[in-house]
Length: 337
Ligand code: PEP
Ligand code: MN
Image (cartoon, rainbow, N blue to C red):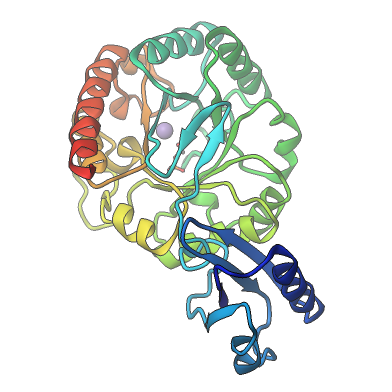
């Protein structure tokens, strides 16, 4: 349920109403926009007498929200959420390019890639330390050592870092991590999501291989219900019948999720295609669709990569692509004016 508040309402009146709603056992999310203040109610609103609330002096209207996700719903929070990661913003017109290897492999590798992607204009460094691999015999990541090397790369370049957590027990190692990634396979690990809700750190939440938009938004809701409102949604391709590409990139996720939610939406062209030659065209299509960012795999020697070399760009290819991304963004901004 949302309560639209009249512009003439005073802070005291609003607090009074919020106090009363809290006494009814409801959580309140106040969103103050340019034109309208909205109180979003979370919890069992069935006992609330809508007509009574609507009749209050400061209330313009009351509406029930049909969707099961509340905090993530654009109706709760009409303005785009802007997330600040160490001074770099994403959402609400701010675009973020995240780049780096699939996995952290060695000090030399991560520092070299970090320097190269920074030089090309990346805003954040990615790199997996805990890797979800289909085969238990495949490289599982450097784990704690990988996180230490990511911190080193952050110190060396100043780039904030994003890396994946696979289990609650690993979180104690994530203090220096700027954005915590939840991978596609863990999108519905509800205990993990609940734990991430208790943190005050941005979460990059990837869409599951077989998940609907609503399921993705419900997973974001798990994090937000705990009080962590900084969630970045990521489309990384879904399962289809085509085998030429690794997954099927659903570019539609960008406008759909931006319509349903106020959270930033980014695209992962690497895991969605599985092929380096498709990363540039899919990145550019994502930018043209209005994505708030991209997460792209870049490796200093893709042929020797321990994981996902086939879909990794060289630093030179990434540099070229970044220029095209900037150019499309500039054109889009001209049209927005
Ligand atoms: C990754 O980003 O390294 C990764 C494993 O991605 P996904 O969860 O989308 O497969
Ligand atoms: Mn990968």
